[in-house]
Image (cartoon, rainbow, N blue to C red; front, side, top):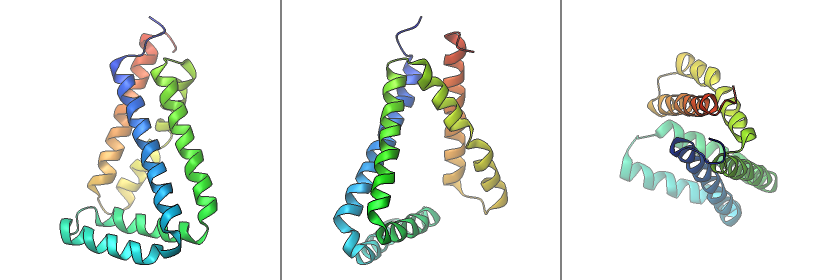
Length: 154
């Protein structure tokens, strides 16, 4: 049954596209606001806290630190973001088109981070967001692995 990816694989492909688009939106924001990023980040953080309180506060703080670092060397960060987005789009295309290499790329790419995410869940203060990402990555590995078995790739 080669040639047509399953609905679950298409869902993983859509998730990859969403990650790529999100990265590109971040690149656009960095490009537009890199000269005044500190003020923009302060305003965005304050607005977030007014609307959502401390919801996702560690992730917001981490994002702010990354953005501050990115603003110091924004051309290099833009290049990194574009490469990351291109990889996400290529993987999504491969999954959607039922390409064997994309299955392997996904299962290895997601699987390699599971031990690292588990370490951070155990070694750091508990974080619901990190738990959700950990579970999502396990689900993706299982989905891709099952599809690989069904197609006789492993």
